Image 1: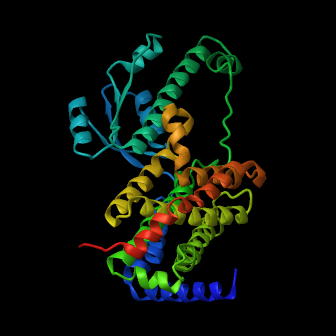
Image 2: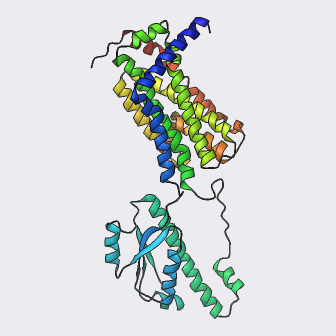
Image 3: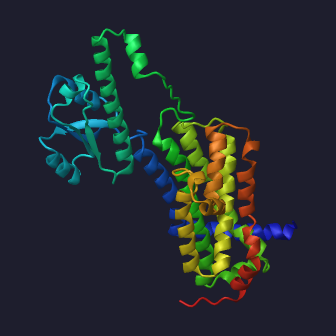
Length: 391
């Protein structure tokens, strides 16, 4: 690269730094918005999982056994028994009003039937309008039902003369040991924040990149910008986005240090592979934003497409619902989203701690995204030199 080209790049970069410093929308979208979102979501899920969620109970049997079941249920981490109701109708109305998330129903005669081996039935009703709350309460209330059944069965077997070992062997012939890998606390924040943060950053990069190009046309400064680059669209783009790349990468460094250094989330590969992944995501997102603007040559359409693409990324990247369980068409489309490849790098590196060679495919995929602007360079140059913005 010639000395003259370096001077042009430096001049354009200085111009872009001035625009960023003097226009609040850049400061908001590049610095304020991502940092606010990072702090907001990490503090929102600070405890990892919701605890002490309000639940009710309808105990029509009201014996020492059923009261013990209710006390044990209340001792679970996620449940707090806040009210006892006289009927199912009362409990249902309380759940419809949002006072409780679920209620546990013990019909009359439950203890008597259990002691007589007549298979009593208990029920629990969950409000699944709240997915996480419903799932956690369902798990705990079902566990409590199984434990209560086992306790009654154990008492019956002991009364018939069986030893405790014989009773346990009959009730639980196979003992299951569960060990959650990489996130033994089952902390939802670990699952979500490690992909939410880069996803939010990616979306903001999409929008900022497109807005940066669109305002050159809207404010009729595109020709001036191109003249500074000697009408070279490559030099113009490099000089213009170099300051934004540096700032966005610093934001990526910030959230990595925040997650792995301050919050101490699992990072079994060390932080440097994740910093590399952050840099690749920043560059790939900028390249994709340039590609969208060059494809549509319209600020509104490009911003709409970027917003849609960014929002869909959260669903199709695989961190909430596995891609392998999606329809084959969606599995194929998932490779078109940069966040999907970042997520694969995160799983391989931070969670599993594999060597970086195991993540070569998503790394190459992100590098391919950086080549997308070359598909629209000619259209972009024509637009910047000859397009007339009509408000």
